[in-house]
Image (cartoon, helix red, strand yellow):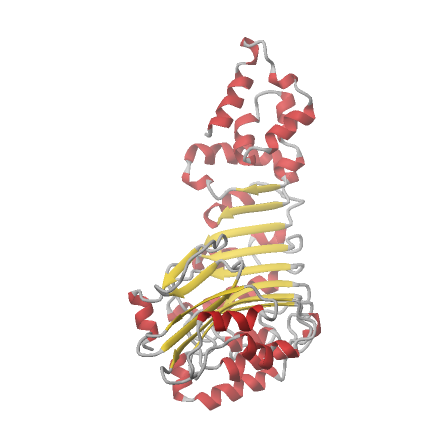
Length: 429
């Protein structure tokens, strides 16, 4: 327990022995003090001391948002927390917890005002048990949950589990009938073996209520499928991809794959509602011009665009002039454009004279964008340029090199050096 909690607790427990009686403070002052504390710590500490503190600590402003992420690592806190939930269950509107606590927390109490549920480290086996029509959890919450955040925490992804992931996605979309906000993510350490939506019915991942979607998929075709009208109210789409397309497949039959993606784009509908689109692709792509640009250009009503890609197969660096000519000038409603773009494996002898980082920056700053940039002129016998928005808006920056100048990146939780062993393997694909 932190020192602040300890001092406050001593004042309360020793109130009969001291001249100062803290519980005699006005309710609004006590409430103000308690709201400064972690609400779980406050609830576990002060419930049961006396009637006044019970009433104040159970105020809806304290109990509205409950985060139990730290509970399972502390058995004493775990026991206390399970005891306080029956006291506040009817006031909780948002609940965050580890998946292993689902049975204890959700099956033992009713939560009539719960609207947001965040589940972390959900395992595949557990997800099958909880996300099905017979689950008591779904029977209670399928209509009242408006915001659902699920992180699937399995460390590895086997090919045999590929259909299971698609099935989990399908169940979540289908069983929570009033969802407005959906965030589904999986462990960053593995890639999906193949497209999740190719060859499955168009009713998969269907919803007439979702307006905000953040989802992890395998390739760009999965993203295009989701824009074919099955999500008719979609306003915001944030998609994290392993690939634009698997480079092994692209090398084998590039024209066929590109033609198929462009054909799928012809089926996209209801894009007039889409105002914010974010695309992050982890692996390098050579299909930036042939697939990514045509896809985004169809989103003519976009007001905000976020783009994070690694691009190969070009004779020059992607800069502000190039992006303006091929994309931005054709987006009349776009107000915000944030990006993290790497152009790599550009020939040492192409694009003469060689541009400097200042040259690249200028092509953006003259259009009102605040950016930083660095260039590697000896990157595996080629050149590489990394340009990104400032302040950096994303929570991950991958594939940096020793030329990266650093700075304040308050949102970034993980950075991967491009010269690490894993990245060397990827660079040689």
